[in-house]
Every structure is written in structure tokens, then in C-alpha cells.
Image (cartoon, rainbow, N blue to C red; front, side, top):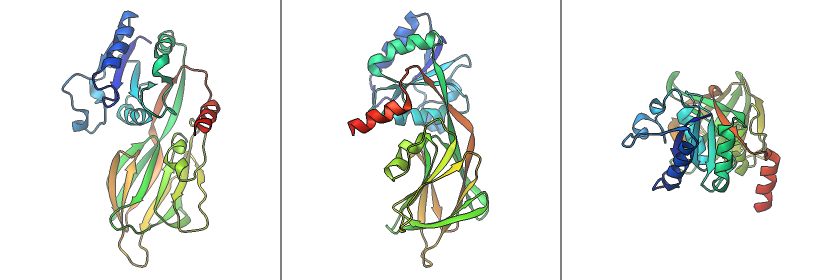
Length: 286
């Protein structure tokens, strides 16, 4: 690889000091390096960090400087282009980022020399319906979460898998996660840790008002339908969030259908540290 596009979390590198160091290093190696032109507002076009329309077609790799949250949002921005992402951790969490700031230059050398692996991650597609009409659609790398809003009552919903009724819940919320998202909110809610490049979906209730609070793991091609129901005839307001960034309000009677997305995220891996080693280190540090 020798053509790169750099995406920076400006909260982590506000003066682009580290960003410019990366660009200078790559250019000194004979590489071509781009970044989003100044004055371009990605958010105005519905993106978080980068409008992919400004990424030249010849770009082979996106270098993302930030933490896990930056990687997640960058993956959403770039998923239509299927550009591999190299994550450099200059944030606080590093499940998704491949390398730390202190080891960035040896890792860049490996990428230039094509000494890396591609780790492909499944994404979710969520479609919200009201009265049979599609009102919202988006994708997620980590999870799609149904949470309560308005009055602090529990919310109620029925779960169907492949059009077959599975269960009903009264809970504070519900998480549908990918294997990548198993180490995020789902884990905090008591869900299992899953090998992140596995293709599957996890359903994890948040503080359910029942003795059964186990997560359920489903196949990648299953179709999950969540129907918002009423508790004792009480009208309930809810919100569905996609990777904690994009939101759509839901009401009693609405439903959201979640399936495997056709889009995917490709992460570049240069280090030899296994996922089990990462988990072991996180457990030791916690």
C-alpha cells in the first residue's frame, strides 16, 4: 500500500500535530497521503468525521487516529467504499484499534510492505416501521439499542426471529449487537464476550424485570423483529440508537427489523497479539 487517507478525531489531536507527523512520515517514504479538505463539514452531509465523496478512488487504506469510538464512526462513514481501516489508538479504549501511538511507525512500515492481515467485521442493518411505513434506516458496527425515554418506566416489546415469536420483555432496554459489539454495551449489561470477527447477532436485555436475563446468540442470517408493545395500556416512548450516534424515536406499535447488513468493515491488523491476549490484558487491568 502507498496511498492513504488520514482521518483524525480532532478532540484527541486538535492542532493536527500527530496527524501532520503521520503524513510527513508517509510522504518521506514515497507514499501519497490525503485528508479531508479544510472547510468541508462532514456532519452537514450526514457523516461523522469524513465525507467519503472527498476520498480519491485510488486510496488503499484509511488511517484513523482516535479511540474505539472514532473507529466505529469512521467505519460507518466509509462502509460504502469498503476501504480497509488502520486504527491508531490515541484515545482511551483499544479493542478495535490495531496499534498504539508509540508503535505507529513500525506498523506503517508493515502496511507499506503489505505485511498485514484484513479482519472483516459484520455490521447490522436496522429498519424502523410505523403503521407499516418505513420511517428510518441505518447501519451499525457495534449495536442497535432500544432504550426508554420520557417518563422513567420500563418499556415493553415482543421479539420475533424469522417471523417466529421468541419472547416478551419488560426492561430498561434491549441491545442487539454484533460480535464486535459484544465487548461494548452488551458486555456491561451482562452479555458474553464473542470472538469479534465471528458472524452472529446477540440479543441482550438491559435490566429486565424477570428472572431470565440471559443473552441469546443468533445466526448471522436471522431476521430479528422487535415490536414495541404497551404495558397495562400505558403509552410508551422509546428511542433506537445506532452505535450510540444516530437515533430514531419509537412509539408503542412501532417495530424495528434488524438483519445482517450488506456493508462490512475491514480492519487492518499488523500486530501478532491475539484477541485472547487483548482480553486477558483488559481483565488484568480492570
